[in-house]
Length: 275
Image (tube, rainbow, N blue to C red; front, side, top):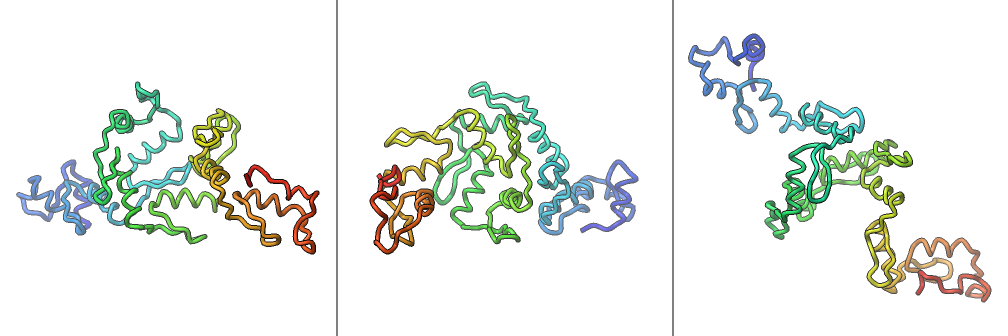
């Protein structure tokens, strides 16, 4: 890597140098040669820059957010992250009004309006506005999920997703609703909850027009129209489209000696879930 005397010389002089080098070692080329990463051979002017770079290889992230626990390998990245908790978003998109804490994030967002997607998948040619979205997508093809939760064994493709998942085990809920104070472990849960206050239901059933605040609720509702009844009662054999309908059905007592519930039993009356 580099010897201890280089660190001392770097502290004592504004120009990184080494007392054990030859006189001509003060040239930038020789100094670059002196601070070289032993893993990738990248060169640096100063030992502090080399140490910061080596965190990429080691995975070390010594800077931690005191609000959500997320860690970073650079202090500057932590400071940028703090803006997400402060709520300060001075950069506004003039096309849709969405605001951002960083100008760079605004520029990236504006690609959505222009339709610019410079990052394409080499396997399926699906394109993305950001490189990080492409990297996440590529794991769909590889099936790679290298990050495992030690408490329940669930695996994740991204370390960030694992950390968010671990909030559930620790009971950490850093995302609070500004209207009612209810807190959530994940930002996505908060976004869904906020629709309760706004009344927003952007997902509509094409068959009956019923609207839902989340895509998963719409998918579950569509089972009613499909006629698929995958949830079967283990006592009487009756099947239901929705698991919740089966749970309601099981609350009533079963009359097994007759082979079916009496005519007065409400379970003989078709429900919305059965039609």
